[in-house]
Length: 500
Image 1 (cartoon, rainbow, N blue to C red):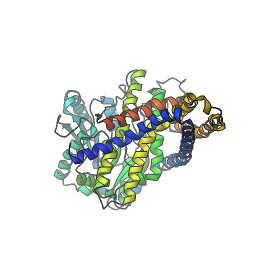
Image 2: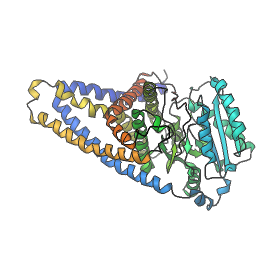
Image 3: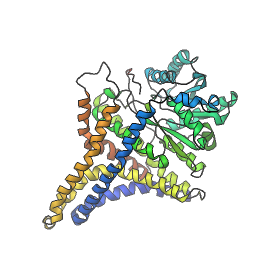
Image 4: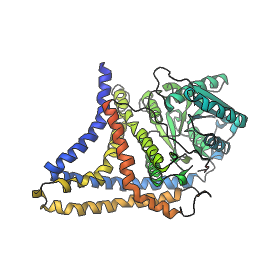
């Protein structure tokens, strides 16, 4: 193992080691130093309460920004800007085995966009390893949609290319190279192209592309920015198990806390960026799981910190995970959360590149490193410490400690702290009702918004089983060098359409 690889391994160990150190010390201190553990739990619960109080206003700000921006005619605003007609939009749709209705929903949403379709270049990217499933659907798509856009092209990512991992990153990397060839062939200026990296089940708000174009034409240094929409999982929300719905709303609310304070934000899921940036960084990394956040880091590192996220308060809607049965859907949810938590792989990448870049401002490095490490640490530890490990001192402490006043009063203190923290749960449940798509006709009337409200009772279980556990799983794998491959999340098999 060479010196650089040894350095990377050290950085890979840090996040998981911090988590396991916390878990092990919680057990040891609960018996040998129970008062220390009690004080730690009180401080930790206070910290979490302050986080809830701090982040809740950002969720509310994002919600009202979403309601406001959904009413704006972004196309008219964009058309009024110089250079509007020069802009082309490349919509990249990597696919493996998604059903034809899923692909058609996405393409239909593009047709419904409030934008000139002669400025859309749509790329459907299949995998050679799934060629038999891809080619018949690609043929149908070509026959139905080829004359609807400026260009509809398909690509087939070869299997087993050296230095690649099976997954979305390697596919979009290949797609990007093919798109660049076509852009040059069509004599389109690279600086005039906005690229939208979408999951293939993405249904964009009709004004989304116009909003991104307007931002691109009006913000400072538009090529030094990615454009992040609000992500909803509304396409098949009504058909999903309650635990899946709670987890997906949790993801949406996390992103809503990020959008108003985008100065330390990285991209997530479906988002947009410029072709100029992609060319400058050499397109997506083909050997990582978390390609959506890594592409932002490539820009941040390439431009020595002069790269940012521009928030787009318009939604793109996607599918929740499905599995054919209730238990399979829960397993699919666990695997999806495990994959998202594997974004911890960005931490060693960030450290190894930040220490070698004297041009990047120190505070930029510190901000992104702290946010990455603190976010992954709390993801893995908060649910366990709040709902489980916080009770260990009262279960394991020797008898002589149980007469202490602090020992007897702490359970009441923690109970009141949790009651105050429940404000965030109630606010989230209420906002979730406001973000619900219309109930489809095939869904029972008994599944009313009241049922959707009571599903939040599952939050502690969901928080632990589909939050902390997959996060610990992913960080432990990275720590031990048992690297996670890309996990394809199974989506709906039936044709269910909802627009955001």
